[in-house]
Length: 575
Image 1 (cartoon, helix red, strand yellow):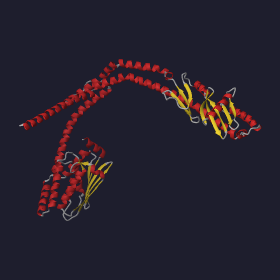
Image 2 (spheres, helix red, strand yellow):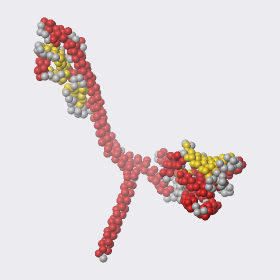
Image 3 (cartoon, helix red, strand yellow):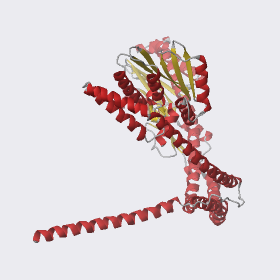
Image 4 (tube, one colour):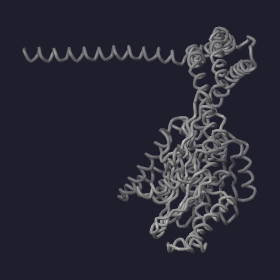
């Protein structure tokens, strides 16, 4: 009793859970349907469009203004950077010229070589004076640095020339100070007095020479060229903090940077009018929302309701209903006309489809009647009986299996067209059965293009012609050769069923062709006539069957119809 109570309780709990699940499922389905209707409704979409036009408009205006400002600032940065790079290039050219002048004075001028030997005497002093004036003349004739020096370490003698100092003691003090501190070879940033300068120090043996280029002159010229009052320019070993309006130009020879800091507000001062125009446009769009909604309702909603009502009447079976309202636009006028034409076409197609379906059923029925011939079944049963008497069980099994596949193919095929691979399988089975009946009298070959396996054909179309050869040509004791060829190309599909039998006379062949093309529904040659009708039904008027024959040489039946594998495969995939 206790076990029964527990089981009963468990069953009740399961039923309750199932009921809850079904109830929740029904609620979710209803909610899902309402949500789907809400999101797919054109009213919802119009509302969303309104929101898109209004709410994000201010954000869009700000973004566009921001983009305009950013673009203006970027253009300013590029312009300033180009000017700065020109200055850096000129400065580097001056550095290169100074290096060449100093090198030539040191290594090619006799006075420079005399100083490099550092031998005190009259020759040394004379060379010292001549080299001084040569440096001065070299600076005047070519661009270079603002100052030069030669320091003879063994004699503690220094030769300084500065184009800007009234007294040259500042330059001499700077050079001695840097040598005492331990100078860094090459070009470096330094301060000479209170002036920033790019300084060059080169030491060869006990001779140290170099020069300097004052940078404050470059900065002053750069400020005059750049038309921004708040722009700041500096030279530094590292670039400035890469803010949005910071620009840097690098000197490869000096290994330092020319930096510029631009004021964003100064650059973007004229863009304020754009902000005001954007905001005014946003307010105008806000006031236009009701007008826009009424226009959309008149232009879209009303005609759509008319079309939906017409489609509803058509679905309810009112095939005589037509839209008589006048459309408010050429697009909907075209839609109204298309609906009316569609309704007319539906009425016509309904009759045509009914007649076509009736014709198809009659055609299939006739084809089945052709296949299920009493003499065919009687001959097959007689063959089975004979084989049973001979105790050829394997042959009997093969024939029974063939009949099973034959009738399954006839009655259980769900499509009007079948893959040729199924047709080929049935043909092969039929030839095997015929070979049992006519042993040693049939030799058949199959030659197919690879694409033929994927072609769809009406069931038993080729089988009928192969069966016709077995019926009228094959005889016991005489070898009959049969060839079945399938070809596929851009123009379509071609099948050829050939035999080397006695052939058909010219008059009989003409009568057969004429009878086939007249489409006789009864009497002789009904198989040929029905096959041609089925072929044209499925593939159009371009499809054709051509019979050629030569007495004593054999007969060839050529079946040709247009076919595109890609189009046909897509059509069957859609089905």
